[in-house]
Length: 354
Image (cartoon, rainbow, N blue to C red; front, side, top):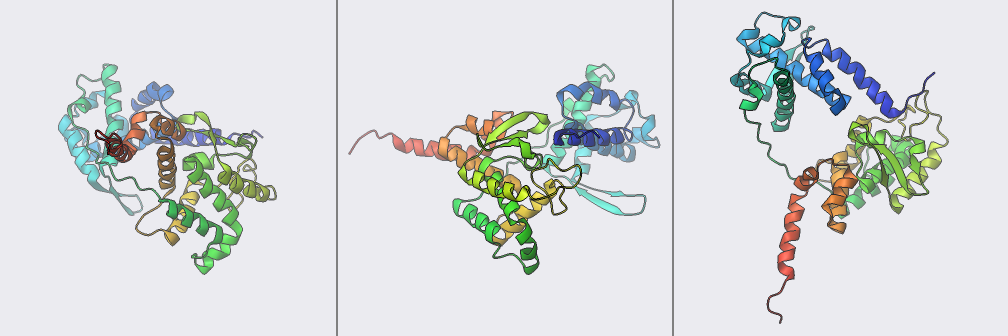
């Protein structure tokens, strides 16, 4: 039996999914995915495949040039028939649409600015490829505007909220009677997970992927895999060390399910914990002690980054620790804090001393 690393398991999962999705797309799209294979992750390509599937379904249902043809009949020549107005109408369609499954079940879909922008990005990338390969004579994707994305206020926890959250994870005082029953079995694990998220700023997917051997207490570091499979080491402080150390004592006595022996964090079924499970446990505890804020694992990541920036004032360090490939991503999220620092700077210099 071959035992795969968690990152390899995920790679395999998405590779299989991509192959399934490509069967539902025109044949020429396969060449497009081959073209971008070396510069994108398989997870990104799966996202593109989902988005392109929505696009081609829209064309077949709403664009006269694609009427009464099946997906297998669409070739590159049809893409010359797509006009900029068709893409603009597609963006409007994405605002709200419904799909009826074969069993009659109706699903509703809503896309806001980011959802529209992401789907348009996939469509544009396909048209860019076709134009570059001289498969089409005009590139309609270059002739329409990208949906304007309005930045939302970054939600993060205040210091007292962090304390209240960790106390609730540890004690479970405000949980329901049913939740308290399970809390006795998971509180050490849950405290380790939430302390780790708050103390390192790692993503949920990175947390899920941690294996026992990835944690090194000699250097207080953890090997993780960033987006795209890039390996990195994140370092943790004393509070995270204490929480992890307590969980390791517990983890040593758990016999994991077959195929999950290497996983650090396990579910009650003794399998590697999932992204959704961590999202649910963060939601469960935060709802008990934090009002007016919807807290997710990403908000814990923002909380860590904010604390790090306040302490260091080094936006490049924050970007590096978070694993942001583009410093502008970090700057966008912490623009409000930059402005606050600039205001403080204006008060430092005194022209006339008393």
